[in-house]
Length: 236
Image (cartoon, rainbow, N blue to C red; front, side):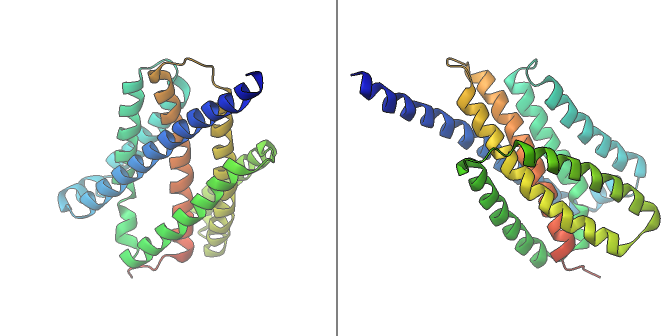
């Protein structure tokens, strides 16, 4: 009887981990769908386009609102209700869709679609690697985070020098950074699921899934934007 308890416990753990990870990806997919829908709606509505991009105050207000939502969810997710965390995540995805609608104006739909599928395939491979690898990716995550800070600084500098070469270098490095972060974040979510205490209520599990979805959503969106800058075909 004692010998049978180990595989039974292992099976139960795997079920819980798989259920949590599936919930994370479901919410991430929902966020991406909302972003895509809002972006498509905005780009086909002249009034909204003029409102968002014709007034810098509103555009930058939306950007600031997005950043505020990310920081709020990240810092206070444990103190808020699951429904509140879910609503804030959906709101963030919608606002991001509004600001990213400009992408649909800049690039052809064919190149956006092909880049999306390339990004989705790359993201899937990285996530699978993060799930199955036995290697501890903590060091990789730390290195990639430092690289992320580096490309943010380089991007700010490039606002003033307007170098197309530097911009392309940032995009290539950015793709590599988010490839690494995707694998690291997936492994971190798996480890979180493995070490979570037994008997957690559904609300706490939902909040963990929302936080995980937000993390992977950001990895996907940033990887997509960097790839689009490399592979996208301009409408001009």
